[in-house]
Image 1 (cartoon, one colour):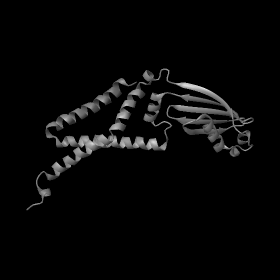
Image 2 (cartoon, helix red, strand yellow; image 1 turned 90 degrees about the vertical axis):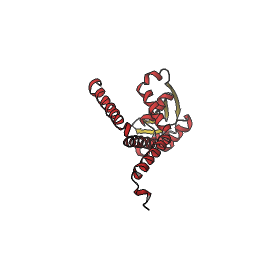
Image 3 (cartoon, helix red, strand yellow; image 1 turned 180 degrees about the vertical axis):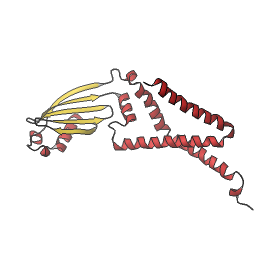
Image 4 (tube, rainbow, N blue to C red; image 1 turned 60 degrees about the vertical axis):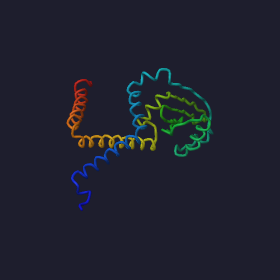
Length: 206
């Protein structure tokens, strides 16, 4: 008796079944992240529709220990103490973007999705002024879409979602070769769609 694997069409049927299984479950696993990036593609492309009145700015004044910023050698400025003091005093979120030391002042900036905080510290007195800007929920979503000021973990999420999109696309493309009645129409639709995008770019994009 011959092995089932040697029956004509065995590998074709089983590879088609595997591709369908893979395509379905990749689509389900990635549904949330793909929906997020599709939705934020619209909000990003039409940011003016959503940003009206969403940005809020506020200013605060305070003082850090003058000894932390008054050192003669810029390398002796107590950066960690200053940053932690500012975070504790004003509930600053976002990652530290820059910490620059000049002759008369220190400039500290914090960045996060839809968020900025800039601090100017007088090195002679330790007095500072903080300007904090919150740009609204949609701006946060848009920055997440772009990966701007989101950190290494979210950057990995973007890479993972891109990989999932590629796999979902490739498994869907491979499946069309197992559908004889729809193969020609499916491939034609793919080519037409690709050419349409190319023509829009060549003819209509400035």
